[in-house]
Image 1: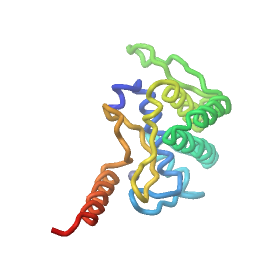
Image 2: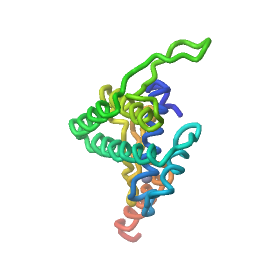
Image 3: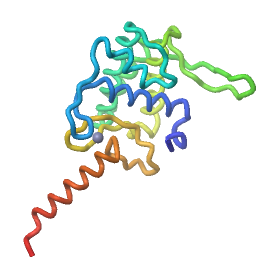
Image 4: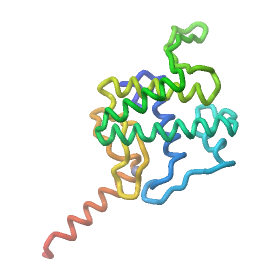
Length: 194
Ligand SMILES: [Zn+2]
């Protein structure tokens, strides 16, 4: 993960986790195949699997995080479509609803680090506040363009572009090669026969 070169590592983890939740919890296309997100009883487990350390997630927390995730998806879509105003509006509303704030935390013997907390330290509000904070830092810097939606046909998964030159267009290597192969076939088909 080279994202740490640009984003503070804590922010990079938050953005990657946010993208991971969006991809698990939103319907659409996943690398060329239709994707249906887990529903109801399957929700807490699906969310826990994305969160670092796989914590226990209650149904109430899962529903709250699912609500946050829908908003985060809209932020990725807005930034991908260069609709920064729309993205900023959603993120600011999320900052207010979660009570997001910075706090200095320290592991004994290590330097103080900026972490983000919410109005309370429940799993759902804490992570949602973290996502809101990380998104403000991304969009409020020159790194906002790194929040993207896969350009491949049949795919709408989101990603955080950690490439050196910010050239990423796809969620995965699979989508990149599928798109390249399709473009190659299209070129070959239009070429006159020899
Ligand atoms: Zn993709």
